[in-house]
Structures are given as C-alpha cells and as structure tokens.
Length: 219
Image (cartoon, rainbow, N blue to C red; front, side, top):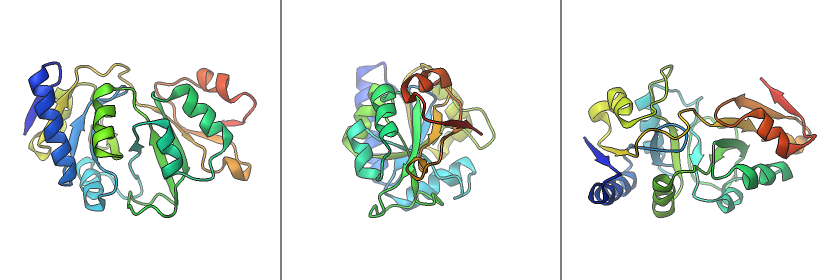
C-alpha cells in the first residue's frame, strides 16, 4: 500500500502511473473527486467490479456508477436519451450530478443488477479526469464501507481499506465534501418523471432552473 501526494509533482507522476497500471490489472484504486473520495476500477472488467463491491460490502443489487471523461461519452454508453439529459449534462458536467440512463445493450460489461441502466457522471477534478482520459471509463463508488460516511480525505479512505488497496491518490480535502446528487432519467421517455434518488451537492433549485416544467419526483 502506498499513498501518493498529488501536490508533489514526482508523487503525482508516479502515483498516476501506478493507478493506471493497477486499473489495467483489475485492481481497485482510491482517488479524489470533486465530491468525495472514490474507489475505482475498470468499468469493463467484471472481476474488478466484483472486487469493488466486495471491498465496500455491497451486493450486486447496488451497482456502482460509471465516471466518464466528457459529455460526449454519454451517448456511447447510454441510448434513448431524453432531451433533458443533454440539457442537464450541458449545465452541470463536469460536476456533482449523476444521471441514471438506459444503457447501450451492446456494452460488454457487468456492473451488477442494473436492470438495463447505467449511472453516469463527469467529475470536476483534474486528476480523475486525466486518469479517465488515459484509462477509459471507471466504475467508481464512494470510498467507505457500506453504511459509513464517505471519505472526504485520503486518510479516511486509508482507515477504511488499509492494505486492501495498493494505490491511494491524495488530492487533498474534497472540494465539496458531499456526494453527488443522483437523478433517475431512465423512464422519462416513457412519460415518467425524473426521480431524485439521492440529494447531494447539487441542489434541487439549481436542477429546476434547468429542467423548467419537467416533472421532478423526490423519493
């Protein structure tokens, strides 16, 4: 196990390289995002996704979201996109919004019991965005054990996972310190409202300022 201080150029370069190699080997990596720290794996490596879920103590019924490097990637991973999804992505990506959408049926991945959906987000963090550009889409969940608070600094992540993770990228304190807001848009094209699955760092007022009269249901 090693923690790489990304404020130090040599550590950043070495840590970035180790994270990229680890992801390629199917290992779990801890990294910073704009919301909270995350545990990340290659989204297209089913064994790695299983390892991520096991690390957190989660079942396949709680599939991880997928981080993507840019808005344009959304249409490669999701289909039948409602117009409002593109409006929200344009307004809030990169940022603290996760959207659940209908997944492309041709994708060869196994994120768990997704029921044909995928949760996507473009994070607003230069280290994680650079890693996404280099390594491709990552399945990422908050760095914590199920039921515990999400890590907002690297030490909290180390306290949770210790030697179970070999590479920790330390990007300092999480800028927002709160998880992303999750919206389910998977049934909007079928006439259903947008469902708020989790209210996080992005407020409902800001969301409503973009979606106008589109129905928003808070569970």
